Image (cartoon, rainbow, N blue to C red):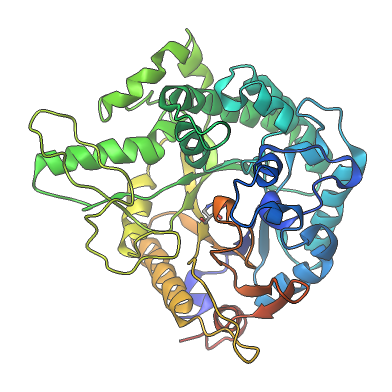
Length: 450
Ligand code: IFM
């Protein structure tokens, strides 16, 4: 496989998120986020691991050097809402904002195009106490934050993602994980609608502020359900019901298609949150849809005739045997199917794989991390991207998750996704894994990598 196979216009990047890498939860006027609180309450494995994370706040220069060494031309990271915008409604915090000036300028100086996510789950605690995404007023709060970020960094940042994987946040709400552990599925569905309104409103306001060539996208869990196609209509209905919940309820409204209530009647519980005119407000054409693909969602039709079938993602039933540390089945075909499915969606003009990677428990032995599985996984999924491009599907970028091991949310530091190993027992030293050397060869050696 060679870099040239993907063409000159292809974006190669790595991805990360503020809470997972930065640490420095109170530095320079930063206010707390819901994830800082969860760490303090002992709800993250390992406890307050997010307080230091991998110390990107202080090590950003040497980490950008590592990212540059890989040979990528883009770096995706997120802005922490409470680092720059106080308790969620401003005022702008100059000291916190200056950190992202340094990172953005540092990227540009190294030939790395900054790809900036506005929201990667770290809701300011103060807004969370008011109900977070279950409160409709957060739509305006988020849009004001988006405006402020665009005004501050829009002179240097061209590529934006308004949200990262809203599904994960609504999943946390549904399971009651963000507060008192009481499941709140109906509130979570209402939060879906608020997020859709917020993303569209933020997108519109950003377009007014940013230069005409700004590239505004959103990232979603784009995992088609498996089996990908079936002659059995009940299985196909189950598949559509799961895909409605994973992704379609987040992008169909943006594309002017409304909510996929027919595919999954459970979604109708969000109806009380939908006010007159909302479906118009939820429309927004993104320049790109960020495809976050780790594995397919196995489904089986519910065995009671007449009942709408829905099986939880990652349930048993997959035909693939290998699973990552976070329980995701491995199947690169699913990426090709996902790209096919969303290639012509009216919500977005093109596709970018904004996350793909393999989580496992790597071991550092004699200074080396032999992670052949991760290398194999990346090669397989990159091949799926090549196959999609050969079919004419407009996918023009790939971001590996993540450049280094980091805080995997509730799992803490237990699952490692990085190309660089982080030695938590040795001052967070970074060690290039075998997969990092492979990625580096792929991107820098004209003969490519096997
Ligand atoms: O670490 C997460 C990331 O924050 C969002 N997408 C999935 C990754 C791996 O689980």
